[in-house]
Length: 625
Image 1 (tube, rainbow, N blue to C red):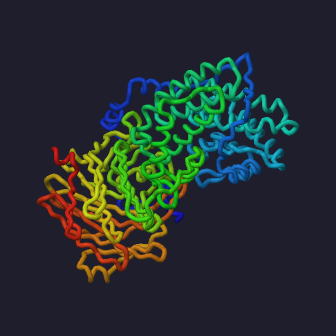
Image 2 (image 1 turned 90 degrees about the vertical axis):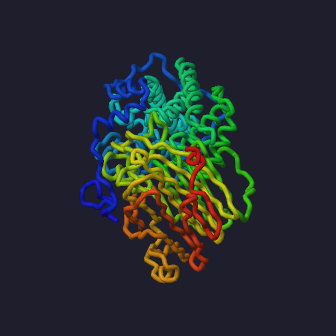
Image 3 (image 1 turned 180 degrees about the vertical axis):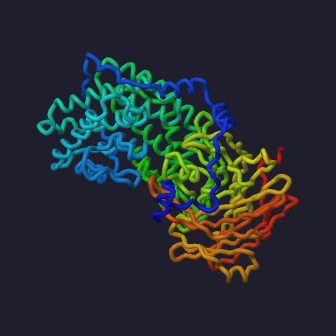
């Protein structure tokens, strides 16, 4: 395991199928810049200029008195309390030093680690226990320590994104706990926090993130609105006007009609949903009006989307930049909103969902605990696809409630070989053609060439349920990739790829398994069913068989990153073959002891036949071309 943790240091091992880090050319840069708006470029340039702190205003701010306190959900209370008590912090599976100053801007830590420290999420607590006064003093001391060691405005913590999160967390802390500080915390300490907050909001107001856009601007808007509601200052009306204008614009742009967030990351979707729920509660409980048109219907759509993008274990799928533990669970957010719905899910039969604008499809059997998640969405918004991956037509699969086929996930945002691999085609459960990536990923968050996507469709034929999608990432090679995933009776899954085009091409396929899954050759099944390559997949005490048709998989390994800073060894089935187009590729995942379905291609019809039932491999858009 340690080798996988040291890849960037040069002493570890990248997966055998990893392509080399691409050379960034003038063409790459031009293909990246052509999608940006002119104002984005101006703000990106402005962001790199030296930035000092605004002068502290002559009229000091004070905490606004509210008719009744607003209680926001706590964030990881046990971990947060321990961090405040000890002054030791753990983010991305890396601890702060045992002794010495808090590393607010230490060069030893990655920027993401420092961001997490500077967010001050650990202050998002209600200190309502009888023994909490000493902890309150320590919490205020941590905030004042930040003020002391971040005096210039050039430190990491003054960047607009961590500033936005810290403003909200400090305001929640002060609003919920100031009344409890009497006789425990000196008033000048509280005044010092409020004075710093005022300066932080003024700084943020000058540095709104119109260069990076996306969820960053929503965080900026949320901070301005929280400050306008909870700080009494002549600046508050201006903050409210700016914040509300930003919020109205960005929610309309970022929340798609099907409820998905346009960055196509379930993790950021959950974070944005929580931001909107915080603002909804703030609006209900204060005189700050941040109500949005169709507010409840948007929240309904976002909540439904998130509930469909979680595995039976209750946690999100790891499409694009998504990790576990960086956002609240879907069930927590439903409870926060107060929408604990009665379970009307049928106890048998399958449910198929398609989110057309987001590009995600699901097939779910609540009775067996099987769930498939299919990705056919764009890399991300053209203006900023930095959280996108080369994962078109990838999928994740849970069987009997346990994750079996998984995407690689994300362990780091730092530029380098690891980041490049985790965004690459080979890190996902899809096909790569001629060794070329689906999208031109470079740097940490840059994308040059972006792959167009086709229609995402779903349906049922004679008891067979399917999702189907296509993409044109390899159109410059004359290749179109269509994938259909079918749930067949007997809880069997069939993955059917169809490659339309001409000429001979190198085709690679990748199947990544959860670390708990054991994969081994299955010679008995191979002899019994006359297949070239079969594999036994053991999930706990349950056994499945993966049966390929005409393609020889080999077993290798890579890593799985369910959380930032964590890489776990996993099994990967990998195959490589030179083939003339048009051609197809089939493999099935069948419960052990189950009758194996008869699967074959009907090439003249571009369809797959499963136990005598034909299912088309062509999407409606392909038929119309």
